[in-house]
Length: 144
Image (cartoon, rainbow, N blue to C red; front, side):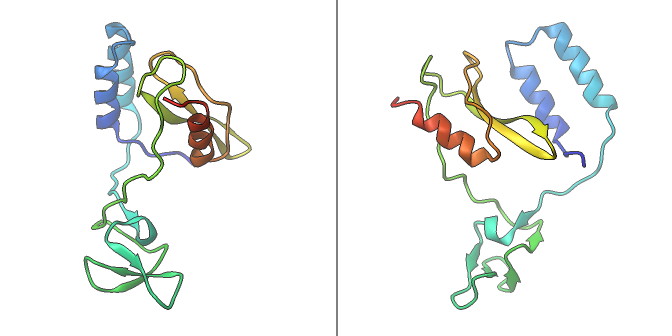
């Protein structure tokens, strides 16, 4: 199963990356422009939505602050807004940069393998099966 990306955001990110040569940027933009696309709408599950709150008496039911209805925790809609991530990624322990990002390094037996990598000095964690584990490992490496 493929992953959907926001091509416009990806092109902006490539254009703003000073580590990529201009002739490479043009080639990548062309590849993105001719890639197969699908129209999509951003959706948010109730359990991940800032407007959703857990029902007092039912652990798998959420009340929606938008429509006033109750929904199962895996219900989703396009009116929601994703909660802010709670785990902060600490600066790089080697160069001090705050440009450390979680990324999927590869897929092994249909399992995404995650690491956190510094965009400035390219240091990274080992591979983990969840983004959360990779961030926790990165954050244990530094006191900055």
